[in-house]
Image (cartoon, rainbow, N blue to C red; front, side, top):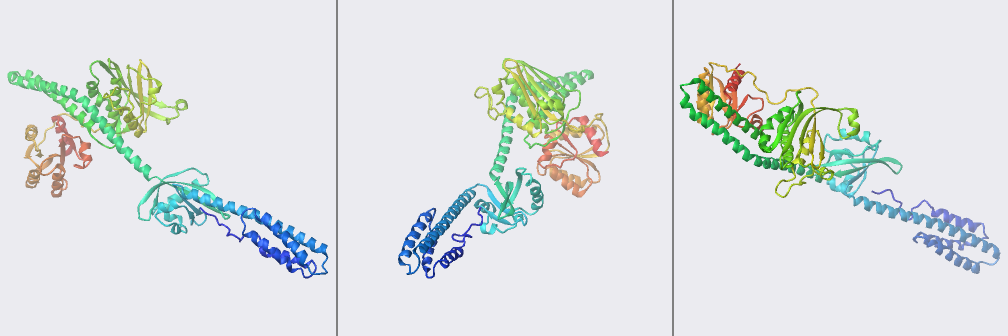
Length: 618
C-alpha cells in the first residue's frame, strides 16, 4: 500500500528563509554588495542534485563567487569585511546544502522503501485492505483485492467495508472483528467475500491494527480458500469412492462363503420338502420337517439382510444404535470371512452401549478390523471381539491428551497374529500403505477405519508386538441419555386374526398367492392386484370395502408411492403397509416412500406380518 508521500522540492525546508538570510547578511555588510544574490545559484542547484553532491558543489561554487566578489568589489569597502562576509556566507550555504543533502537522502530512501513495499504487497497472493477503524471506509488495497472483488482498485478504495460481504453477513462479522482484533486471536475462518459478478468466494480473514497518518486503521488480509474447498470436496468424494471400493473388495471375498451357505440352505429346504409327501400320514413328523424348512428360510433371510446392509452405498447418517447389536449383526458374516482355521471369540458387554453412529459404516469398521486381523494370521490363530464401557477421567487424560473427558463405548479387536513394529504401526492409517504382498490388499482398510471413526468423533488406540499380536481399541462417545437404539421391532408375535378386507398389490404371482392364502387362513378378505395400475383401479372400485392396502414398493406401471398418492387423493385417511425386498432406509433414501410409514421387509415372516397388520389397523 501507499502512504502520503512528499512531492519532490516541497519539503518544509523554506527557500524563502534561505533567500532572506542572504539579504540579511548583505544588509549588515557595507552598502552595495548585492552580488550576494549570486550565492543563491548554488543553493538552487543543490535542490536538483541527487545524493551528497551538493556538499561538494555548493562550497566550490561559493568560493568562486567569493573571489569574484572580492575582485569586483567597489572601492571603499574594507577588504577584511568583504572577505569575512563572504566566508560566512559560504559556511551558511554549505551548511544548508548539508541539511538539504541529508533530507534528500532520507526522502530517496523513503520513496525506495515505499516502492519496495508496494511491489511486495501487490505481488502477494492474498487480498489486503486498509480500512479506517472509525468509519469503515477502505483507504487502500492491493491488486489481489481487485481480483478478489472483481472491481478496479479505484472503485474499491472509498467503499464501506460492508460492501465486501454477501448480504446479511456483515453484522456477525463486525461483532467477530471487534472481539478478535484487540486480542489478535488469529484467523476468522469459513467466511465469504462478494465478487462483482454475484458469486461468493470462500475466504479466511485475519486483521491487525495499524496507524495511517496518525489515525487508527485496520489491515485485513483475505485468504482465498476456493482451491482448498474444492480439494476438500474432492477428498470427500474420493474417500467415499474408496470406502465403496473397499466394500466391494470385501464382498468379493465373501462371495464364495455366501454361495456355499446358500447351497447348504437350499439343500435343507429341498431335502425336507421332498420328504414331506412321505410323512403326510404322520403329522408330528411333517411338523418337524416343516420346522426345519422354516429355520433354513430364516437363516437365508438373515443372510440376505446382512448383505443388503453391508453393500448399500450411503452418506453417513448417525442414529442412536447399540454397539452390541452392530457386532451381533456382523458376527455370522465374520465367521464366514475368517475361515475355519481361526477361532473367533465374541465377548459383549452386558450393558447396552448406546452410541450415535451410522450402522452400516460402523459395521464396515468391524469388518475391516476383522479382515486385517485375519490376514495377520495366515497359519490360523485366535481372534477376539470385545465391547465395554470406559470412563476417561482426569488421571487418564493427563497421559492421553488427545481424548476428551467422558464415557465411551469401547470396541476391541485383538488377534494372535504377526504383530507390528513401531515403524509399521506409525503408518498403518496411511492410505495405500500395506505390508501385504502385491495383489493381497489395497492398503485402504485401516485408513477407511480411521476416517469413519473420526467422522463419529471417536478415537483409536493400537497396541502391537511383533510375533505376539495386535489389539485395536476404538472409543466412541456414549450417548448422555440412553435413547432407543436400532430399528423398532414388533414384540407381539402371537398370530392374530381379523375380518377386514385387505388389498394386496404385488407383481410376483407366487408371493401374491401365498400372502392371499395366509391372510384368508386368518380370517381376512383379500383383493389381489398384479401391478400398480390395477391396484389403483381395484381400490377405486372397492374404496368402501378396503380397510388396508398391502403394497409392494417396486411394481410395473406404477410404483408403490404413486399407487399410495392416488389412493390418498381418493381417501385421505387410507391405511397402507409397504413391503419390499430392500430395507426401509434404502427405500426411504431413494424417495420411493416417505420415512415414518409402516413397512415390512421381505421375506415376510407370517407372524410378524399379522402383528404389523393389527398394529396398522388398530
